[in-house]
View 1 (cartoon, rainbow, N blue to C red):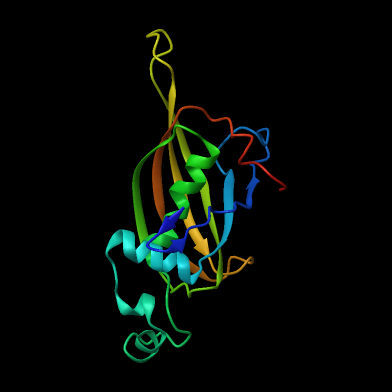
View 2: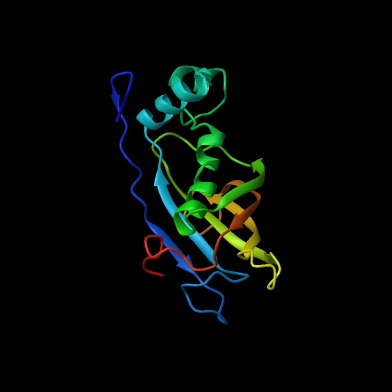
Length: 179
């Protein structure tokens, strides 16, 4: 796919899962975490700026980011672009999921070219739909959402909570990988 002469490459997922001790790894339970690693490129940031209309120069110009923005490492990735990893993880793990809400706190900048690890962790799961109504059950899940700038989870860039309605608690076979 191309956007104004720039090639857009699909995201290569390296999603990992960790499960709560009491449930099989293929079924979501409270405590279960899903993670995705991602490095945002200059092209990602330019494409997001074009689509969103957010052309703040701290995202597009190193000198402005350093001098006016105070970002000593240069351009920063749009916070909402980084936060888009959360619904992406959920949708890849549970096709048909509906993202209902998200709170976000931007704690630290993510610099262009730096790798981040996004994580969603199930905090609460509730079933909707009566067993005798004939309607399929759905699951309302509250997730803790965090994006780290290193594997040790010491440097949080974004944190918050999300609510999603899932058609199933079974993880998609495409989303699971090595634990």
